[in-house]
Amino acid sequence: MTKFFQAVWLFGALLAFQVCTAPGYYNSGPGESRPAAGFAHDRYGFPVGEKCRFFDGRSYYIGSYLPVLVRFNGTGCSGQEHRKVIFLEKQAYRHLRNMISAAKETGISLQVCSGYRSLEKQSALYRSLPNRAAPPGFSEHHLGTAVDFARVNWDNRRYLWLKQNAHYYGFILSFYRGHPLPGIPAEANHWRFVGVKEAGKYYRSYYRQY
Ligand SMILES: [Zn+2]
Image 1 (cartoon, rainbow, N blue to C red):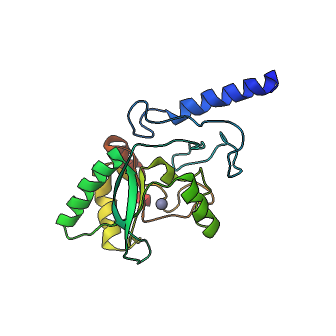
Image 2 (tube, helix red, strand yellow):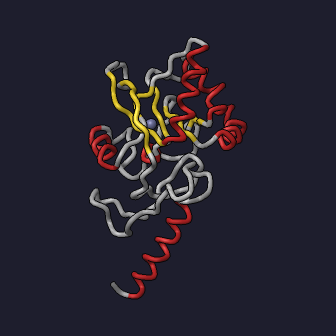
Image 3 (tube, rainbow, N blue to C red):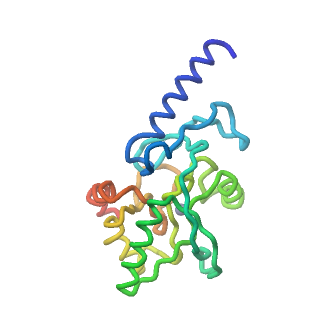
């Protein structure tokens, strides 16, 4: 490797480390978020360190980030009611559990149908739904903090409940209607844990577009 490429690699590594460990972003404790492992192409052909974009306009590649995960039972999406094992980042899961109980008290049943996805899983999903799923390495589901709920649509009670209450539990709607990111459809059932304080701020800014 020439000196030039070494310098580019180092710069990229430092940049990725800074972005990937930005405080409050991943909402995991110190040492839990990790920079991308290398800056060549990964085995899926995606350039590691290449940028991707999220709802907040920041952009980066998730690379080999691996959250601390807990496992629980969910269901299938799109009406399939089979039980399914789901993984979620531990803080996100703790808040999710409280949110699901609170919803239940008001007669709303929230069922999670997707949580953490590995690169392999996202890769398979992308192959089957290239127009709907993000490419591997570029999905919020890699963070372990994003969930998809079963049977949540823009106009149903589950959605309305989430719209009013999810931010109290630290969850936000990532892709609201009219969000600025190109190529990502608005999604009523995709919610992401960002911490209670951040979620409150976000909610106040974007509530009208929810
Ligand atoms: Zn999703």
